[in-house]
Image (cartoon, one colour):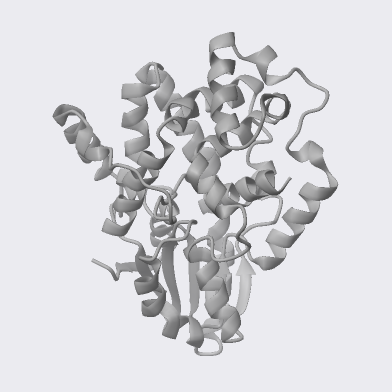
Length: 341
């Protein structure tokens, strides 16, 4: 249960796929440089084709209302320290810190998972070996065994959860199992706020991770596994690649790298990869981004009445794009400014 809980807590706050391999004892290779030149050029073009594709520190203002936004990812990395030092004074002066999941939401999720295993385990429906073809199941069983889960357990897990777990490398999983805090910048921001007595508020309910996938068909969930399997074999390399892009501020490059790497290595057609990426973007980012605008702007309006602003920390992939938080705020009359460029 500890292993399952670790993965789902990481997966909830890291639903957009950001991870770092800078945990002690884990290492990998940056895969971007190994891409064929033509594919790398196409990827770079796609990565800069959306609004606000770069940057992890932004300010949005509207009249006297102020939101400082920090794009995060959710594993430990010594490079977080520079950002934490930079934003600590603003956190200390803010009316509130808004994050995807605060301590109260994580506690509720932990309790729910302990009390109701059916949230992650399907004890009545067909098992995964019955749903996947033999080659797919063999590959999946091996990948999940590497992550500490035997085939008999994996066979009954819900497909969306399996797909989520495949994105976390075996090394990273073993390193974070014993930790209870500071899994990444989100937790560091929360701790900084709590140390200063600043209110911490959640952008979404504790059960979001379950409602996100509730309307997927069985085949869509299985396709999530199929699309994730190629990543599983080189998850450390993948994490290094994405972590390096994050600290370089190349945020949408992270998303498009997943697409173009799948073109090359998943065995799926481009159309099928695009279908999976579009579904993931809609479910994991776009819908959530839209739901966050009201709590962000409401909190900023309340803070402005007291002459203060707010700070918000959430996964960096929620910032860019036509349906990203930054563009949605712009459409609502806010002015956004990158601070780390």
